[in-house]
Structures are given as C-alpha cells and as structure tokens.
Amino acid sequence: MKPDIFQAIADPTRRAILTLIAIQALTPNVMAEKFDMSRQAVSKHIKVLQECELIKPEPSGREIYYHFNAKKMQEFDRWIAQFRQNWETQFNQLDEILSTIKNQNK
Amino acid sequence: MNNNLLFDFTVDKAAKTVYITREFNAGLSLVWDAFTTKEILDQWAAPAPMRCETKYMDFTVGGKRFYSMTGPGGLGGYVLQKYISITPKTNFKLFNCFADKDENPQLPGSDWDHNFSEKNGRTTVNISIYNESLERMESIMDGFKQGYTMMLDNLDALFATLLEKK
Image (cartoon, rainbow over all chains, first blue to last red; front, side, top):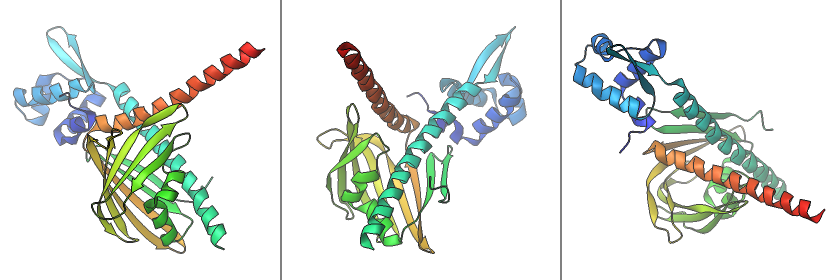
C-alpha cells in the first residue's frame, strides 16, 4: 500500500530529512553523511517520502538531488483548514441550539 | 459570531491525531446532553448544508449510534459509532467509522475521546480524534465536498429551469 503523509512524517529521521531538504536540495550521499546512516537506510526513507510526493528527484549530471515539494504540504494545510471550518460551522450551530434551550428553560 | 468563545483546532500529524477544544456558553448538563442525545445531535452535528439523521442511538457502553449524512443534493453516506466508555458528564469515548445502509462498517475508523468541564457557567469540551490513516480523513473531506458539489449542481439546474421560463 502507498504510504500516506502521516506515515511519512511520523518518523523523526524523515522529519529531519524534510527540514534539511526544505532549505536545500540534497543527494542521498550527503543525506547519509549528515545523518550518519547507511545508503540503504537513506534509500528507504527517500522511497517513502517520494511515494507520498513530499520530495521529488531532479537529476543533475550523475547525481540525483531531492527537492522539497512545498505544494504537497500546502495541499495538506488547505485540507486541514477545510476540516477546521466544518467543525467551526457545527459548533456555531450548537451555540444557537444551546441558547434556544436555555431560553426555553427560563 | 461567538468570538468570545475559545476555539482551538490543532493537528498533530505525527501522532495522527486532531485536537479540538471549544467553549460553550452553557452549563455542563446541557452541553453533555447536546453531545449524547440524538434529538439534539441531529440539530447540529453536521456542518450546514449537510444534515445528519440518527436512525437509532443507544448511549450505553457497547451501545451504538447509526446515522445518515445528507447534503442538499442527496444522501452522503452512513456513519456508525460505538460507545467504548462513558463517565457521565465528564468523558465518553467512541469508535467512529463509515458504514453501508445495512450497518456494515467500512474500516479503518477513528477513536474519539470527549472531555467535559465547567467553569463559571461555561463548559469546555476537549475532543481528540485519532485516525488510523490519512486516507480515511481525506475521505471524510471528500464526502463534504461531494455534498457541496451536489448543492451547486442543484443551483445549475434551478438556473436552467428559470431561464427556460423566460
């Protein structure tokens, strides 16, 4: 199954990778060095991040640089904002009902 | 509206949990009833223009609430909730999932935890929702989007009818 964004950022190493990549695109070799990890371990993390489109590869000569996909994060934030709006609407409805019931009981 | 009432909404992506805090200008008993009786729930527990209609509700530990969600353009789907624990006027927990019309659950679902407390005549409700998967949360949003889209489609049809009459 394709990993979802929650799974991708649930891991502290992947969060750290994202934080670094957000500043500057990196190659897997540089990531391995910075995090003192094996190439294999880095590849695994990259695979997860790439599958949920949080990062995207861009070949440059013989190297592959991974870039942060801010758009994906924005999509996520927009989606969260809608979710919040739904709750706000519901609670405003409840406010009115509570005040109606309170007035009836007076 | 209600700007003086606390509303906090945070998403802990790593913990797959949404935290919602809301203050209500009413006493604890009334707010508790609003969350735990179907007559009141049906009046508010879906964001307009969506509506919910409870088919049955048994607010006891192990009991269930089964309800439909309807948008302006038609039925949006069914939700099944199972009450896991209840501490009257303090806390209740439930397991929430989508279902078909025959109450067959569509997993994964989410775990909801509600806490109630009263201070100076105002009641604060803390809700945390733990989701097993993001896909599921996204499907909730898609459900709402469908509702709105249906509403817009209805408007299109209405405009078309009005134009014809001219």
